[in-house]
Amino acid sequence: MTAKKNQAQKPKTIDLINSERTFAGSLLQDPERVVKIARDYGLTADSFTDDFARRVFGSVQRHVGAGVPCEPLAVQKDTGLKVSVIQELIDDCPTAAYAEYHAGLILGAALKRDALATIKEADGTEALRLACEKITQGLPLAQGGVVAIAAATWLTEQDEPERPIMEGVFDAGDRVAIVGQSKARKSFYALQLAVNVVTGTPFLGVPTVKQRVILLNGEIKACAYKKRLRRMISTLGIDGTTLDGLIVVNTSEEAQPPSFDKVLSLAKKQGAQVVLIDPAYLLLGDENDQTAVKATIAAMKQFAAEGLTLVMVFHAAKGRAGDKQVIDRISGSGIYARDTSTMLSLCEHATEEDHVVLAKICRNHPPCDPVTLRFNDGAFEVTTVAPIEKNSKTKPKRTFTQDEIQECFSALETSYRDSLDAVTRGLGVGVSKAKEIIRDAAKAGTLKCRVEGRSTLYWVDVG
Image 1 (cartoon, rainbow, N blue to C red):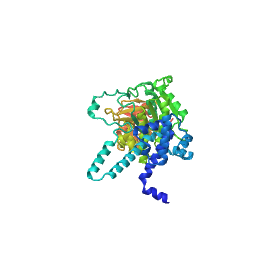
Image 2 (image 1 turned 45 degrees about the vertical axis):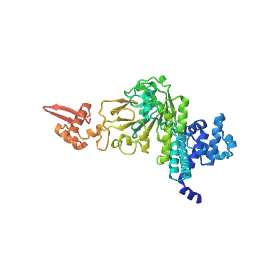
Image 3 (image 1 turned 90 degrees about the vertical axis):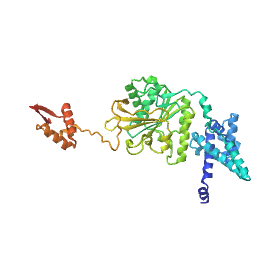
């Protein structure tokens, strides 16, 4: 009871200790990478308040510097900590990809402690002013690769070469979100994007630059996904032997999905340039915990730090997608939507079945006009249908079966006017729609008809 009371009284200290121990676990999971992060942030043993984390930091730093593996037993011998404590640090660490986020928290807390100590030592107003000036001058200009530079100097530097992947839509190192309602065929869209990028062929009319892609499929069984891919490339006219650059990781039947860190590590081993995760929610964790969300964002940004493009497939929020702005359609925390460089939204078309409206928000490119896509034989194609999204104000186009239409008629011949009355009453449609139904039904042979003088008679053949 006393321990819980103390935890409630000192949440900031406990949060810092958790961050320090999580960072220590990251050091043990991926020593070389996390030691580099610590070096970039200027962390030292004095940056830590937790004794366990401080000892692990010193031990791992020495092992990496000497090129010696950081096995738990070696760290135990170096630190005097129990192997069970070391293993607990590793197990409690969600993923080493979050190390940069926790490094920032640890550095900020250390700088704050140093600043407070300097201020307390100041005696008098002038000494306090000099102490504050010293603190300001001592703050690092660069933390974790974030560099401060004068604009005049910056403008004299040469521009970096452009590295487009989908021209005018997203570039290398971007974070891209694909979002759509259930059954919007988001996974087909994502797979088609991967196929076109791997082969360097236009994706729905937009030029792409050939890249090596690793695709994490976490929802669809491998056997069904293979059939989907085979049907798609047949429709697109793409030879399967040209897909050497597409690495598929099927995890739908795995008990636990891989972490961002493991996906990043696998992508680097495979030499991938683009990472596509479908669906995103498997890796996001608790979306109601803002600390966890920020740590996830840090893990996602690590892909860009490693020079990789990250594309993730999100489910749309509950409700009708067409009633929301594109930026507000991602389910869960709005931070994910606002962190992306490009968002590709698939929304149900207002009137046309098997059609979706594709809307694009591109932070680093000029605005793109929405287009209507039609799903045909396993793949999407661009159409000339007006891009009108279905929302609460648009009425869906109702279709009628042959039986429903024939129930409005009998074997007796009926005049055109009486036929219109029968269809409007029987199907609950207007006159214009009734005329269209009768015309199409007669053309399809659902209704029989013959001309008598200036009139046309309609009936159903019950024989």
